[in-house]
Image 1 (cartoon, rainbow, N blue to C red):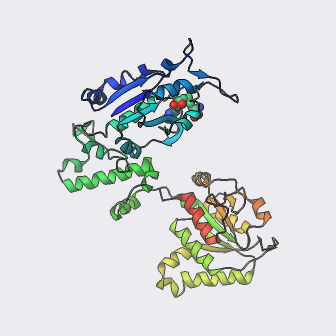
Image 2 (image 1 turned 180 degrees about the horizontal axis):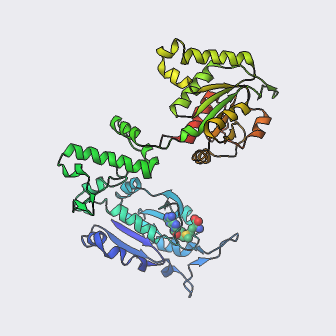
Image 3 (image 1 turned 45 degrees about the vertical axis):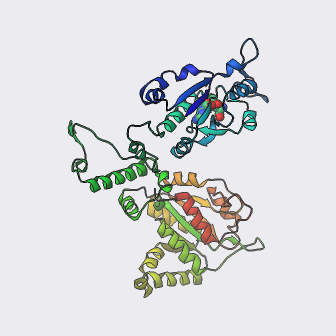
Length: 424
Ligand SMILES: C[S@@+](CC[C@H](N)C(=O)[O-])C[C@H]1O[C@@H](n2cnc3c(N)ncnc32)[C@H](O)[C@@H]1O
């Protein structure tokens, strides 16, 4: 594989490419590096490679002509990468794909970056190595060179070593230990000394899952988890963020189809389905709000039937879900009940299909320290007085489309899932 590195600072690479495994791989002829300096392709006596940005702004921009001429020195069908914090995130998955290429060009930016027209002129894959800003693309290019090279056949002494690496199977690698068996009282886990192959494999898998859950829980969504993995993960201590989240479904004051404030009737499905969502995600509680006494009575009768009456034994799962439901006459009563339970008034978050100002992620953050009450409306949505009373209005669920007419049950489920996601 040949790497063509377009850089204003070829000397940056000198030590990195001349030691360890990269040096060996070069000597074996597995990888080759060709440096092209855009400064060698300038036409003025000062060898100018940068200029002020059009439209103003801080810093300088790398000019197009020297970069274009530098790129013309690379093979036409080479895979051309532009390093930029604005690019797609580079990953092990990407490294695996790139390891199949013959010629890779890495364009290292400096200053504020390069003239954007270079991307239009060439088909460039714009890649970032992380959500931070470096002085230049050189260290990012080195990251990519190392990640790709170690996947090339013959680079490592044992191919398996990279197959067990972090990310190769989407999750993080288990911890390693070596001699001595004990150091200052710190011991190597007994199982690794047992010689019991299947037990060691199981331990390694579980440690991988544990470390991933602790440091990079979002990776667990990417990987396939079998029944044994899921059972193991369930047993690990987890942050019960859901406990701080409460739902309330208001039947007053809500809007009717003429946008007038009115009262709606309870709906069996809303009671059952939202309580099941609440139970699945481990929420603190679900409050039905109606000022009508006959409706309150009806709700209480229904709840008794499922939680204490004959159905409680026939359908214990349903009983568990409906045990989370309480009835209240108005929003203030709900707030009081939560205050009593948690010692703090909840942050009030109203829901609306139209407006919104707080993201799902911010609500998740709030849950780390406070109870949060998500206020759901029936009819044609919550009345203005509730929207005004709320501390925030949650961003609507619209999936980037105009149509977003969801039932309150579906909206509740999606919102709770977007706030809490998987249990990690
Ligand atoms: C100071 S940075 C320019 C940052 C640019 N103004 C921005 O905010 O997107 C200069 C050069 O460093 C490289 N660079 C900086 N951070 C990077 C990252 N996270 N991944 C890849 N390249 C990066 C790019 O080549 C970039 O053109």
